[in-house]
Length: 476
Image (cartoon, rainbow, N blue to C red; front, side, top):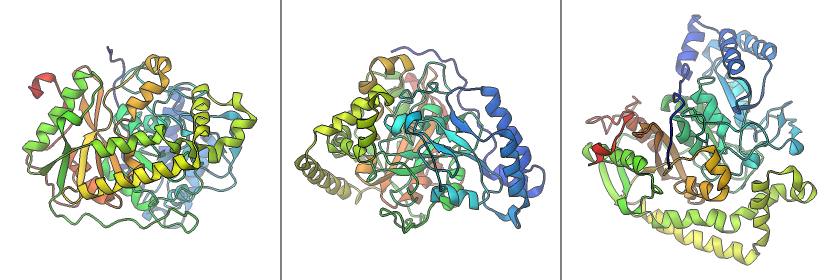
């Protein structure tokens, strides 16, 4: 596979902290920020990042309303602009799931989005996605196919394609996205931003049109861990209307963190030597650091991941979309339609058999957490161009989800961390995983990997794992 870099990579705008400080000090204002955002989106045109945006006059009016709120300058997200994946409801705005014939206008705002608005955040618009949130590549859409910021032909990843792009283009500092099989991590990896998938249930999924309701998570795309921290603090909270809701786990206590590293023979890069070289260079830095590392076998993780699309969980998508599939099959993207129909073959026996097998794998993985606190592995093993995905839509998508499919099935928390470039100019990302409710510990390790200061001691400070360009020579 060859790749010719045409893009510049992410060009992040001001962070959440910078925007809030600017607004609170008076050196900036929500209205000025809204104007900058509107200008940036208009300058790009219809590039596949957004499905709908708030018109300029209404965006400025919303910014003025935020400025006029009593005590506005003390709000944690005072005037901070953000985008919402177009599978999540915002009152008065169409929710399309990238399927115009399925679209409806939401009557209520999803609680997660409502929490952001109450904290002073400025809603900008709905971001693109693979139709019905079914895909990890960003090409399954009737709208313009978005491209990665690293090159005109590289896929953006999906299904939260537009959410990652809006952050990577510097249009907004964070976006609300989702993750069922890796949708909040794969596009982050392909656009050089942070993609945080919290523990299931910690952020309410009420108002999200489900892909697989038992697995879905609302996630955050951002440019840095601090921005994730600030938005997660607002988003997390119990919701009595969400049957999967649960309280957030404990804060990281400052104790040494044991980092699991997969056996090198378990890692698959699908013939991409440049990506392999970059990842193993990162592993070397971790091994040379002060962190305690533990060798881990990936077998049970990968076996669990195989159940997602090679087992009855694909049938769970029919809970939401079976009636529409029967009534208007031609309105559905052909690849998505075939995936939905593939769920019709599974029986109740198949579902119980798969659940029993998954429980065995959960128990095996659970025993592994006795010896490690987090697991670090690649977010993706390789990249693809749009043409490659269009030619082999299922095969390429399976490759993209190799390291992410098992995350929600095994009830894990994960964050995709940008770690520089391959020798040929493509993005490198590692994923930090932890057991359910270890969100703060996982974010702590992610911050350490980025050499980003956080409130706790930096275990990896002996050799910061900052972003750089890795070459094959560094591995050898």
